[in-house]
Amino acid sequence: MSVELPVLTIVVPCYNEEQVLHETIKELTRIMNELIASGKITIGSHLLFVDDGSKDRTWNIIEEQSMLSPFVEGLKLSRNFGHQGALIAGLEASRAYSDCVVSIDADLQDDVDAIIEFMDKYHEGYDVVYGVRDKRDTDTAFKRTTALTFYRLMGKLGVNLVPNHADFRLLSKRALNELAKYQEENLFIRGIIPLLGFKQTNVYYNRKERFAGESKYPLKKMLSFALDGITSFSVVPIKLVTVIGSLMVALGVGITIYSLFAWLFNHTISGWTSLIVSIWFVGGMQLIAIGVIGEYLGKIFKETKHRPRYTIAVNTQDQLQANTNAQ
Ligand code: UDP
Ligand code: MG
Image 1 (tube, protein in one colour):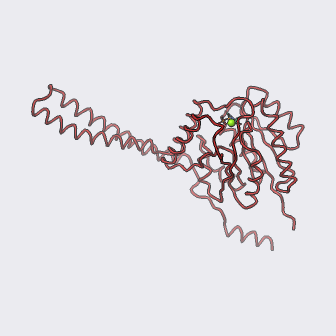
Image 2 (image 1 turned 90 degrees about the horizontal axis):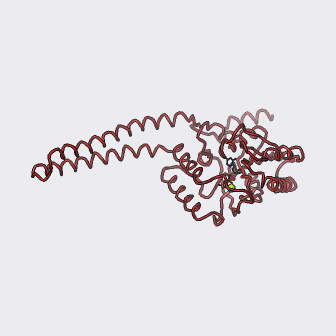
Image 3 (image 1 turned 120 degrees about the vertical axis):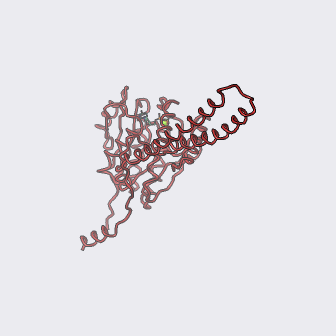
């Protein structure tokens, strides 16, 4: 019985990566050849480079290489959409013709050899394989602390993330098909993947220094990425407003009692009592009102995402159908 080998596509988002691209292509080609030689993927597998509106020679290199290499394909976005946008573009484009897709950054920080382990896990039946960093000693102390704070905060807000996992992962075809149903505009792919379900596992690797060039994630982008992650997954910040408002009203009651006493026993200048009572009460009431509006807004926010409400892993009817067809 001949078993058909899977078509693998490795998706690589690239933004101004002319300094590393040749090396990246060389390394990924080596991995492709190893995977083909060991019979883990078919010869018709691809490397898909997504040019995210680069201003340097990135696209020229991709075009050149696509003519020279049997693996290299290119996708050029109309402008810079950001890492997440480039990644989803690549995933969607390769979905139709791939059995599984690996996403990896262009800068060779992720260990390309881990892809071999990803494929082993795929053959064991996993649909999602996360590349997880063993240590973060190549990151600055600042990046390590901010990342840790971020994971903790997201956990508290009820968003399930795989710690120390960036966007280096394998997705099977059915995981990709499910991901395509998440039609939200503020993309935070890392938060969505755990929601897909199916069989998921981790592969550990050491993250290296950037091979060349500079990080495209300066502090400003990191903060906006984190904020996107929180606000596209959680309505907790909105709910906090109601809580703070209620606390203010409760405090207002205390202050009212105190200032009434002060007024009774003449310890205050005239007008202070009514002023202080109204500030706390009105302020608190206003916050509660905003919080109530926020609750509705939160509902709308959730609805507008049109996320799938469930994901079917196996359908016995399909199997029944397949068996009937086979007979
Ligand atoms: N990237 C992209 N569009 C952007 C910024 C980055 O496609 O607007 C790509 C970049 O080329 C790299 C990956 O996303 O392949 C991760 O970026 P980077 O290595 O700069 O991030 P860091 O590793 O510093 O977090
Ligand atoms: Mg990087």
